[in-house]
Length: 369
Ligand SMILES: [Zn+2]
Ligand SMILES: [Zn+2]
Image (cartoon, rainbow, N blue to C red; front, side, top):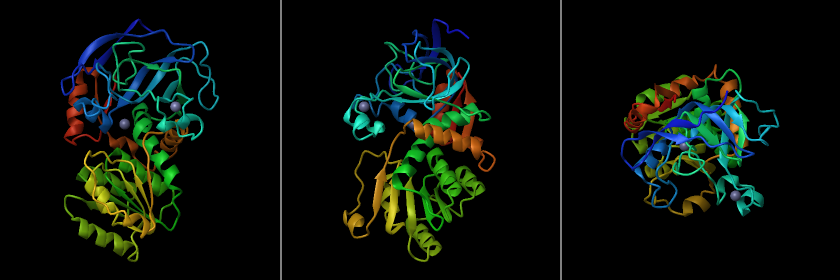
């Protein structure tokens, strides 16, 4: 394989406007970089927020931009010194790979704290800008540029590239979250709030980890059906129940104590406020979805008097990518991960995919450039 000089890409030129198909240069890779042919990109809820311009004021997204940060691709060209993946396995043209964001490797968070996902100089995929090198750092493009600081991991054989792509944001974030909040014990009840891709992956991981009971709270029905099929012990539709009723059912399931671990994957403040009432005294609460700009109403005594452990995470580093991909490969017979994926769209149809996601018709649309 050899790389062409240019690639077609779906470019966001103006917030909330349809994306334009443009030709962008494919740079020659720097010594530690790589060029990949994008095999599949999946859409993340964050792509919708980026499209609306919600992160523009903070300077996070930069127009014009090629969106898409859940990507797997086949290597078409490796930089001179990029020879192995994160597990020291040789890399070659044609390998199907995923890659982490580019952490700087030299700030306090990268070196002392060893929390690269908090790196102050992180360079992320799908946030632009696409008008200067290396141009193609988003997944809604035929080719993508893997920056020198990105760790690369090979995608295991026998995994649908679209399923693998969905691991590179949603699932690796969950793996990171569970790592931070601590292991799930076999006597524990885990409540997941939110039945989007993050919530469903959180459910699969809790079940596979041996949780005694799992509860999924979410909507709409099609997503709750997946949770039921995957083995959730109790599925509660937020549209058909109220918070008091849900609490009652969870208390009943836990001899009146409440859940040992609650995982917030819904993004809504109402879920966070409700979750504080679902977790038992001395229990744990993991916050992953929260994204509302307004503050939530929770009294600080919830944390000390009830002795809660609360953790928040976002993103993930290369070990989380590796573990997410391995989990998907190993447990795809038990959990029908493909059910999370929506229709497949071409680059020209990225706008339709976005609309499908906004209306919740689609859980996770797939872009095949
Ligand atoms: Zn994402
Ligand atoms: Zn850093």
